[in-house]
Amino acid sequence: MTDHTLGQFIRKHRERMLPQDVGLPAFGRRRTPGLRREELAQLCEVSPTWLTWIEQGRPVSASADMLARLASALRLTAAERQYLFALAGRVDPAGAAEDNPQRSSAQAIVAHLHTPAYVLDRAWNAVAWNQAASDLFTGWLEGDRPTEDPTPPNLLRYTFLCPAARQLIAPWEERARRLVAEFRNDCGRHATDPDIHALVAELSQADAAFARFWQNYDVVPREGGRRDFLHPARGALSFTQTTWQAAAQRDLKLVVLVAESKQ
Image (cartoon, rainbow, N blue to C red; front, side, top):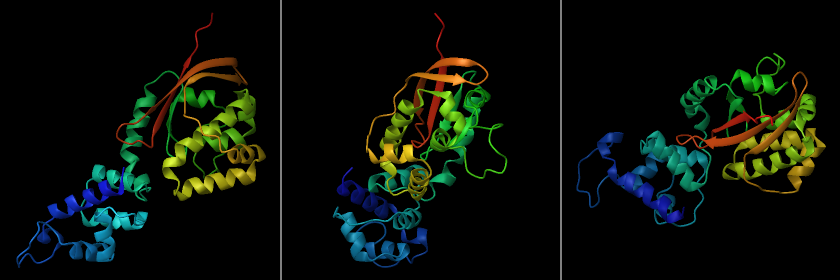
């Protein structure tokens, strides 16, 4: 999307607002419909010049906080707010809270699947999973993690920091290297997300392999295909993995593993 598209989106929504909608007096002649730029700028606590430039499509900086104030002043719906942040290439600071309904739906879906399935958020935290996934990924999901561990069950933390993962995932180094390249590709849309920066910094310091793979700057798409495991109780297992993105919440990914038939 271009800066021009972002500016047009803001201008169109500004023109749809009535002064009385935001507690401003409606008297006086107005040459254009809706709010004046100066009025919207005052509501958002930004300069009228900045608002003029962004509506004109000039390459001005728009922080996440500024966009949040703009979305609030324009009374954007959840879909409109998501579109605004996408146009600006920013991460919505309220995104995590807005994910909750989608996460509840995701949990209901995976609970009805009889094959291992889990849902990842933008930082690859598992936000939903079923019992089959918990049984497969020893040491990662519920029932396997220390009760005093306050961190969410993150796929990268599990892969690089949990000794059980290095025994389970086969071949570990090949899959781990690919996973880091997939994550770099996936988080490119959220380059300013502080949670992702913190996760990368933590893993780079904690594990030499992750640091080496991350510094390779490899970028590959997240693809499905065969996944092999050496389970401590069930022995060698093979699955075909498929990943889907949620239509209503693009940051959520549903991962399903279907057992390969034995010849």
